Image (tube, rainbow, N blue to C red; front, side, top):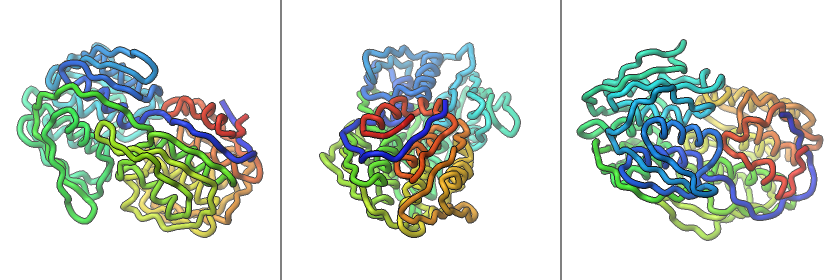
Length: 438
């Protein structure tokens, strides 16, 4: 359904955004791979995560929702997965699909993975290629290695040493999750450090995992296979990728004062916050603490005068999902913002680089694409007045609705339906802060 956002009063209030999607997916999967009961609180109950829960049930877990965001998982343990009679359907979720390929990969069962029309367009070979090194066999696949894909796990998997050619937490996690059911040590080497939720959760559930520096910005992760994972409670922190929208909205709407509670502050996920502070955003971290192995804090942000900055390519893995909303912030900054190394944006739910560029054009903002760099020429204001094609991408929809809260003329998006995949409460939450959405 289409929606329009308009400039209005300053935003104010205290809100809690949904639980982190990355942690939510992993909490369910680790519950599946653990013998006993895993209790999860704060689970993101968007469509993507619900589809992961359904897949875990199909593979043998008993899962129960006991209250809002509260779930229990009775798992079958590493090596204990059952073969699903039907395809595992992940809807729009590339994270759920690729990580579950790793979970299933080294089990001696056959599984078919599928998704919606958008997910069927996304590349899966980047996860399949390393899985084949373990002995996983790809039985069937769509054109170009796309969904639907059927894989068959080996009876005797072999551990691997995998040097990832792309900075992808999904690929790294798929390899480590596959390595759980392979004897010996499985290792992943990454040239650029990516979000480390899988490594942290492996330790939280009792696996033996070692992380060491590798090169200037990379790391090596070594995992001892075939552990007996022990049930452990998981408190899911607020998703920094979801917090990004009210965070930027408050920064670009003059006079705003917004606090977002319990946000994950893992340094491999806070690239946007680092960048916004460099731009001059008034962001305070309040009440820092640790829960379930993750750093969290409350964030207070106020309307700010932003200045354009150069965002280095090595920061991309820590904020890859936040570039659309950063581009919105850059439009209201004074001066040029250059975001470097955005090739991964081309293979998200949409070609996000092209979608962001089209959205900026619809808002009358000057920009350029130079290779994999996005350059935004900010003037402190943006005309607005256009309609943005979201291409079934939830982050494009939310980003340009936020933009319309500060443009001279209202901004419209053609479809808000996919917002529910990651942030079901986005529209009412923003309205509670004072956003004019119609």
